[in-house]
Image (cartoon, rainbow, N blue to C red; front, side, top):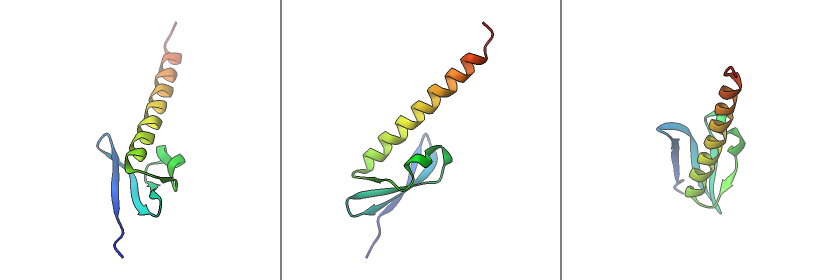
Length: 73
C-alpha cells in the first residue's frame, strides 16, 4: 500500500505534514502555533490550508492588539 503524504507550508514555512487516511487527510503539526490542528482529520487538503490561514490571521490580530496596548497614549 502506498501512503500519500505531503509537507504542509504556510508563508514559505513548514508547519506540518498531511497524510491520506480514509475520509480525508490527517494533519500533524510541526509548528507549535498550529497544535490545535494536530491529529485532526480534514476531508480535503484545501481545508487544511484554510484552517491554517484562519489561525495565522487570528494570531496576527492578537499580536497587533498587544503591540497597540504597549504604545503610549
